[in-house]
Length: 353
Image 1 (tube, rainbow, N blue to C red):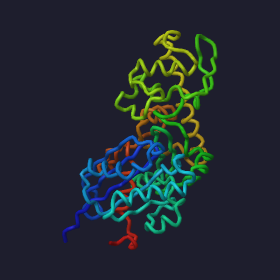
Image 2: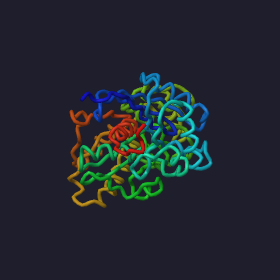
Image 3: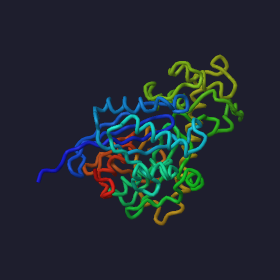
Image 4: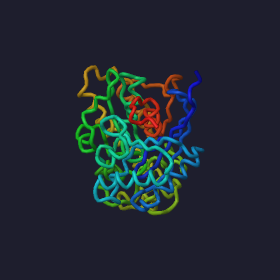
């Protein structure tokens, strides 16, 4: 019997970036996939979300895709007074963008909700993208540690015996457990990572202003390209090394006439080291709650995978090959891919068309 061919669109709707994955499937097997992403600060124009989702679908060639799997974190944006309001607004935008599609929000209980139920229990859909990634990986790698460092946050999720064994599910619970670290490689303000900077052998306090961001640090160090600098610059100026140096100098209320390029590179190296320590400490906190914690292999996921590699090296952990034939996955859009994949595998008859 010939298996049915179909496509599913996975959406990961964040407050600063929207990611999409189109899976071409035959039966329950993914034959091919493509991913796309667009920076989008939803707090500025929440009314444009629906149009952006349509643009992403067109970019992927999805057409009138029949099924949409949705996960999100954008409900936390201060565009909305509450997470409840945010989830409902996001679901409305998806409905408007895909009027002919069946929409399946992914919940914090690890299952897909009928759309009507999602409207009734919106908090169950809030910030569930990390769980989609973890459940996807758990089906292939029963003992591993998911470390996903993105533009804004870091997820550290343990998987043991094929189960996601995180201590927290909601954002506050995950911040307490160390499984969520509000630190990323682009949008994070360095003054949330360091309170002082060593300058000429002395410790200098930093300004509590939004003069610079971690994208400047990593552009100066050559760890990201100008094209990867996908967030707006704090001063609205160029995404060049010189402009990044000018912004970073203001972290200590200086400028490029006061500090040399070499001094600013040393500043960037120090902040890089401190962010590494911050994330490594959280990884150790998560591992401390597990038995045989150093037997876990680590996935390299997210735009900050170069940070993950260094954390893994320092802790003497092994890594998982994401290009394994049985389980390939995109490096920077895993939640979108994962939520679509999980819908392909779902056996919940409530979702039969």
